[in-house]
Length: 373
Image (cartoon, rainbow, N blue to C red; front, top):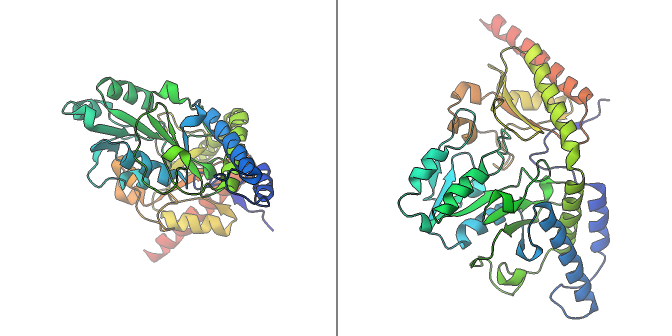
């Protein structure tokens, strides 16, 4: 029997063993971090220890970490609580940013998926002090790394506030909030081997933030609700391990490059998107002309290989990618795109299985097309 292989880390990375163990232990302890007795103080200590670990992952101050229910809430909090009336974002953002403000301006991207910084400068000319600019550090579908530091430098000089969704970048490339020069970044635990259902909005500087969930005074009054202590502890451990194991991404990048080399040799007409610009080392988005995305995903699943047809955040539906559309990829080719996102445990043997499966599928469907004609 073929061993299943998980090649969909951008959807969710497998929980690290150390994280699962710690969460199981924490769930045995009664208490509430807002209580003043010993049980409550123990909960508080664990949460604050985790807060420091999450802060260290991105070079931030611990007291500027606001724990949330995930990256989606963190992105929404940044957009809705920043006090800026005008939102400008890119056309390739995650849905939680794109749908965070229905009136947001959209920056275009080039054919490689990189944001047009010239357009941003022109957009800011009118009233920059009313603007929040939100541009992701790395795209979840193509892996493209955006020039966030350049964007922030220009926008901040004009008086705008800048937020970056760094959910996919965390644990895959180094992040330093000060070097990025942004006011806020978003993180999600389950993208770095932590639990689902916990994330953070992290401030690069102190400024008034209007709580969107109100009630108690948790998270320094910036996000009410009893903290998910076990999940936060898991997040903290995942953040520490992601920071300590960042060097492993070089090997993951070599594996991704090896996969793309194999694809080019085996399927010469394959299109690898954004291959000419900096990408996350673990991410490859490609299309085999004439082979529909859903067909590839199903065939690979039957072969024990888990991949995605783009973002996993659209209710499990295989729909046309707004990212590839923004890059002006023709609809027929975009409809053939799949995403492979690797982790530390993946191997070249799994990559070879993937390529062989796709070649076999292409040859079989090609013969069927000829017979039908």
